[in-house]
Length: 291
Ligand code: G1P
Image 1 (cartoon, rainbow, N blue to C red):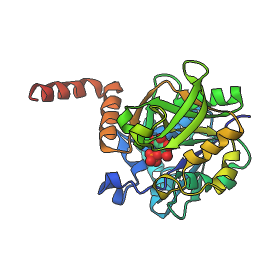
Image 2 (tube, rainbow, N blue to C red):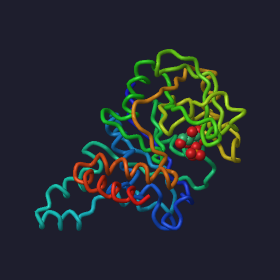
Image 3 (cartoon, helix red, strand yellow):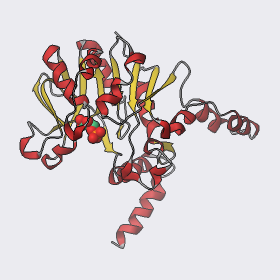
Image 4 (tube, rainbow, N blue to C red):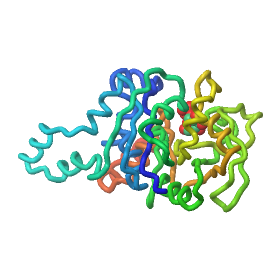
């Protein structure tokens, strides 16, 4: 079955970006000229998704505004003959792609956020994307790669990446049996283990393709790491019932959930941008020569 629906859990507080995130949701902070959320949305659209489900709260209205039609802005750009900008503004969501907003009334964890989307997703496999993990690609996006595998294997697929052992307590960590160089059958998964207790250094990155059975499991998943309802814990139950694969995606991930990751992503994107490349290299050269 085709994966058409994607859930973006975006109700987090974003305290690492205070004071900016006091009024601007962290998903709306820009990497160059696009808000972080739009990079994930474009990756979802590239993967063939047509229903984007944002799990938000009362402080995140600007995300809905961003995907709403702006008549005044469009009229002004049209009158000024700024057709390129007009087309960018009009195609934030391409034709045929719709945005649905669901409220997460309480911040009870990632698993709880995903569960809030149950009624909209229904009984079909779906994707979950955490926009903090920005994955840059020259070719097709990470989610598209995963959707192809999920459809082929008719199974859930979780994106993973090797991390330094001292960072295992920041991630869900998997143990898996290799099938190919990039694909492995998941045997276990644990949320944020201490380095000496981690079963491996293979970490879950914010991309999942999941069987809808996960919703029922989430309903009975108690609080786990950090006192929150963890998606990882429900996945640990799911893999005892049906095959779940981990997949080492092609692409470069930036952890935009913290300041350094935002800087790394910004520099990377600037260097990839035809207009910005030369002046940014120049700026770096000049700055580094004084370092
Ligand atoms: C969440 C998941 C974790 C995963 C991580 C990826 O953690 O719970 O398993 O490894 O995203 O970014 P969070 O970063 O929300 O604490």
